[in-house]
Length: 139
Image (cartoon, rainbow, N blue to C red; front, top):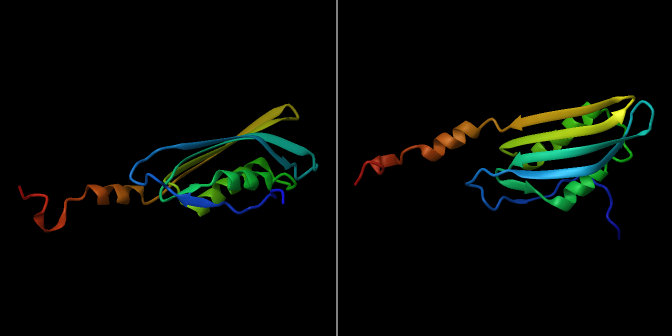
């Protein structure tokens, strides 16, 4: 059976949870529909994130992005929804979603959404805290 669009983002465990590293996805063929005219809107998306415990599985991201093809969506709404769905799926340390929408009516639109995990500082402090029971002072 051929692949079908879906809103389900699948994940897998981050293989390097102790390190901050960036994953970038380029999505050059995004389409949705103008909610006012029903005409197609075309965009290039760039999704950059620093994973925490989970990563986004690529095929599910492709099918997820494809699911917007027949939906009416304002540029601002669809970009924010994509960011929200990725945050909900993987809780990344950092995320930037950039939607670069092609020119319509003589105007191009770029929408950028950023997210940073709120407990990042607490996690860093926890890692650098001295050992309990004076173990750090023993020689």
